[in-house]
Structure formats: C-alpha cells, structure tokens
Length: 198
Image (cartoon, rainbow, N blue to C red):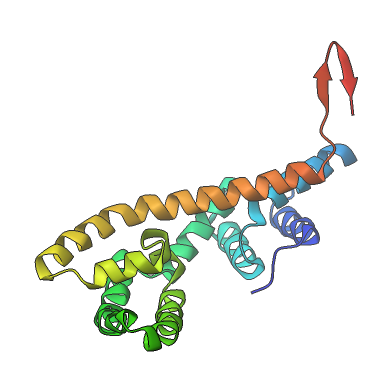
C-alpha cells in the first residue's frame, strides 16, 4: 500500500467540495494551507488506499459536510474489518507454541544453539505485529511456550484483556511520532523575553 501524500489531501478536499458546494469555501490561501497541513498530519499515518476508501464512504454516507473526524471514523471501521480479532491473534500465537517449546530444548546444546536461535527468531518475527506488542521478546515467547495448560489458560485471559489497550497505545504512539515529524518539518515560533524568535 502506498503512503498518503500531501497532494492527496488536496484531492480529498476537492472531492468533498465537488459533493458539497458549501464545504470549505471562502478560505484564504494561508487558511487553505493550514487545513491541508492539518489534514495531512492527521491522515498520513494511514495508507493512501484506505484514506481514499474512507473518504468515499464518508461522502456517500454523510448528510452534512464531511469533516476530518468522519473520515477517521470510517478509517477505523475499515481497519477493524481488516484486522484479526484478539481471539484470532491468540490462536495464531497458540499455533506456534508447540514448535517453539520443542525447538527451544535444543538451546541447551552448544552445537545446536546458533541454528536454533535463528529458527526461533524467524518464528518470532513471523508473528503478527499485534502479537509482538504483547510478546515483546523471543525469551517471553519461549517462556509462554513452556507453560502448562492451566497457566496457558490464565495467559490467554491476560492476552485478551491486554490486547485492546496495547493496540490503542501503539496507534497513539504512531500518531504522536507522525505529529512530531510534522512539527519538525514546520517553522515553529517560540516567545522568549517578549521577543518572537523564529
């Protein structure tokens, strides 16, 4: 999927304007630039195709002027429909636990250690990014793989309880990083000792 470009925001605003002639009119060039910058900063963390699909849905389903929040809500609906559920993520994790437990036994043998670590790292890296929010290292994965059925049932409960918050935090972190990049790319004015410095 392609990354969203600043020029895509201009196209999105034009689409909204074509479908609602009252939308975003009578703006100075400075206001228009500020609007495009803010929308770009807010939407650039999402893939281009998803943003355009969400815009289309927002235009089709809205009786009023499409706002940024409307598009973001449509993006969230699209993302939710495409993401694995927390139970599906647990099942994905559970499927690798037997092989991880089996392979990790070879870590005790010096000759097998390097090759085993490579295999286990490949397994760990192949897990969904969401799972790696919970299982943050290979050693944690090995520890989980060595749990008995009772411990594993408790671990499943912890996993299912933690995943929504972990996903939310990851999304917030991505937005924050993108916002900081946006700020760094703009001229920021600071007021010091009653003088404006650029």
